[in-house]
Length: 387
Image (cartoon, rainbow, N blue to C red):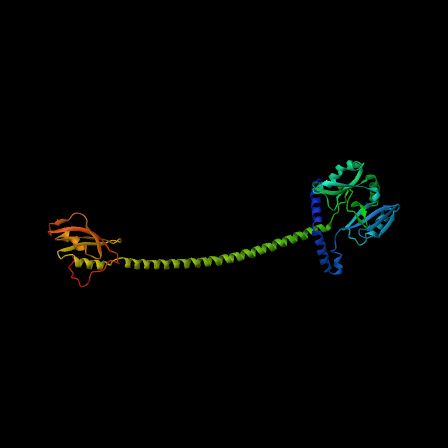
């Protein structure tokens, strides 16, 4: 086991514990069983998979082999057989088990191991093997280098912030003799464990560096299948994203067209409102303003015959400017005071006499009355010439 694997081992153990403690393993096992049941019988064995543990026990010079979960021994041979014969007997015991799924465990009798119950902090869950090494001198009469050991977490309740664990240790001399015999027979062990009924207890007293390394040819296939599934998933997500993008682009084009139409409608509405406002403005101005022709008619009826206008102006505010000549310009104020169209008549500047015409030249202004109070002079009134 290289340094990288040793460094990652606590993280891997933590992940394995989290996986085993979750409901996912049970669900996946049930789901896989249901799916296998749908396959033809010849294919079900191919897809069964999973590790198959075969347990070896040495007793009175005889080797007993049984499959985990099966109470009956499937093979029995003596220490006196040579390596080839022992391997043949083991092959008979594991017949029908795929070599990739086969796992061998040497199971020790309970009287050959020392077991101690411990209460540990929950933080020790990630480093149980190291904690076992620290506790070895206090809990057993052995040193760490004298025993094979393992520390397992026990199910059940424990005080808050604590966890229950069991330290299991056995002298190396007890195990090394059996391991050496099996190694000489060409049989490698995956674990050293204890019996728990017809199954293994679930610990491994072997140190990590002595565990057998399995090369799983299926791993490449599984990695390829996982990669293919991930690639297909990415392709599906990409296709979905592409379809959504196309749909969004189509909708955006439709929205742009509708926005352009809406802008045209808004422009037409604005033009219509401007036209309505303009027509309303003109109508209001017409109703609020006095017609110039009425003013001219009123002035023509009022100013005397010896008076004529040279200039007549009306600005947007209704201010009327009159410039002209009269024999008696001062009397024009009294004449215009009776007008119903003009008010505030007044001279601007000084009245001067024109030597050429011997008339008084004047400039005066007035203010148009509001239409409600201004009424044009009667058409039957006498008219004077306005020049």
